[in-house]
Image (cartoon, rainbow, N blue to C red; front, side):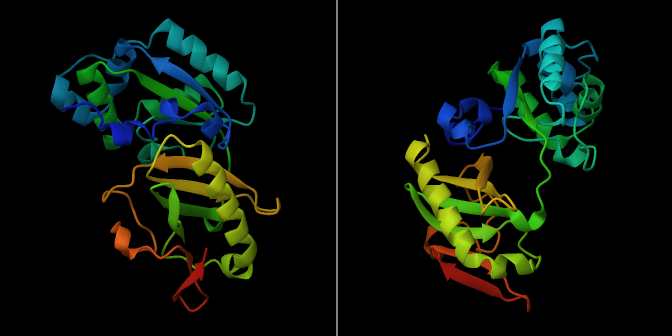
Length: 252
C-alpha cells in the first residue's frame, strides 16, 4: 500500500496552513510514534490482516501525557480524529471525549476506515497525528458542503441531502451571503486549488460560518444534491430541498 496521494494528504488537518486552521474549531494535535500506530492498529481486524498479530502493547508515555494534557484544556470535551478520518463508525454517540479513558474507548474500537489510514502510516513510516477538536453540537440543518474548483465556488449543497429543513429556505438569502463571504475568505488563504469543504452555519450568530473539514475534489467524495462530481454538473448555486421535497437552486 502506497503513501497517501498528495491531493488527499493536503486535506489532513496537520497539513492545513495556520490561517486555515483558524477558520475551524480549536484543535490540539498530538503526533503518534510508529509504535503508537501499531498499538492502535492492533485493535482493527483489517490492520491485523496486513501485519498479523502485532500484540496489544502500550501507547508511548509521551503520547499518553500529551493527549491527557490536551483534553484538560478542553473542559467541554473533544472529538478525536486522524488526518484521514474520524472514528465515525465507532464514536460514542453524541458524547464528547472528556478524559483519556473516554479517548481509549473510541480509539480501541475496530474501525475499517481508521485501519486503512493506520496501515498506510505503518507501511510508509509517514507521520500520523491525532487531532482533538473542541466538541461542538452541529444541527444537521446547519451543515453545508462547498465545491471549489480552480479557486472558484462552483456549487454548495445542504450536507444531509435527503432531509427537508424549512429553516434553510426561510433563511436562504442570508445563507448565500454568509457562505459566499466565507468561501472568499477560505479561498484567499487556502493551500488548495480544488477542494470540497464542509462548513457549519452557526445558529443565532447572523450565520457566522465555521470550517468542519476539507475533502479532496474527487469522484469518491459525496456530491450531496449534485448528481455527481462531474465539473460540468455544477451550476454555482446553493441547493437545498424545499418543503415538498423538490431541489431548489439559488444562484450564488
